[in-house]
Length: 477
Ligand code: NDP
Image (cartoon, rainbow, N blue to C red; front, side, top):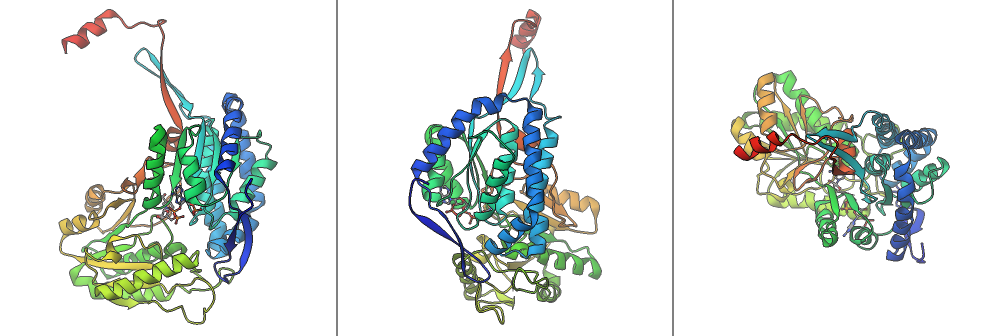
């Protein structure tokens, strides 16, 4: 950085400072963008097989440093290290390989009428990412952006940036030409906004809160920059009335898990559980029993299923929401505002479940981003759907039912981009990722990732002119 300032990175389980990173400046962004711009022509002109080779080298680098990255993320974010190895390293590693593989089959060119339609890279792509699945969120942007021929300027979250530095080393070791990949650390309102505003950044891809996403879109609109937004959620989990006791128990217990993964710091967490009114008490019992199995503790202790939250700010925010739920009159089934027993240091929060919650309550309406589940009751399928959709968000949704056709009917009525029927298995393949409503604009992953990071051009030639009759028949219509 041209600046002298530093930002501290904290171990979320011990509260110790484990690293400092440059507090980047707008001047740093200017330099990075200039480097990316200069590298664009050469990078985009490479044969796509060559870019695929580079992506596979990055994949191999991630593979070789799996343990180191998993441990770094376990310290920064707090996810238990075993899970972090699978998810926090497994996903980005897989994404580089999947994206490289698709380069062979993705249709960069097609014919429509007498036009050739080609997909071309934007140029310089600014990638602004959050801390919850930090490397995964970077890879979701960087892999398809580079594969499609763009160059990138990455701004990771200041809260969990160490993994991004490891990625930068891997990219360097993979021998990518200078300027193709650039990393600038710093705070969002300075570095993030400078990227969003920069006239030489052709597209900005943002993942984070709806609040910051709106600001990025506002800043980027000044030069009509292309914008992709992956934002927050308050996702419903509808458990219908036709399940027998065994099915209902499985659905509620699985739903608790789907809310608590990564201590609730998951954009697609199903944080609102909707159950039939007659089964509310049963749901409370099952959910409390399921929550008691989420042992909270040191991310490096194999017995821990939940680590701490990422930061003091996040812990205080989540505890504030728990207090709000109590004040709003929701029934506290388990958990609360106190630290989990025996955990005096670290940003730990008790897994918490509220029942008897009402649509007007803040804990039902707002994204909490912690291990806090709100159980709501409904009367009938129509009310369940209405309540599920009663949110400004539309990222994810789940349905549990024993009736296959009902499942299909209900899931299609839910206004969300990522959905599950009778399962919450992680969906990570090539299917599109993104949300309806205020959960974002655009989709990432697989071929949808290529679509997101390419401009579309029609090329018209006079080699194959349309017969005049075509125009005549069109004008008659
Ligand atoms: P934030 O919105 O706080 O931050 C995300 C990124 O944006 C960070 O790099 C941050 O920088 C930066 N930033 C903050 N303010 C600005 C600004 N004014 N201009 C430009 N950049 C800015 O989100 P969190 O990191 O707290 O992540 C949690 C949020 O992300 C949740 O709402 C979650 O739902 C959402 N999310 C959505 C996903 C999806 O796929 N839809 C996936 C994962 C998370 P810094 O932190 O350094 O200040």
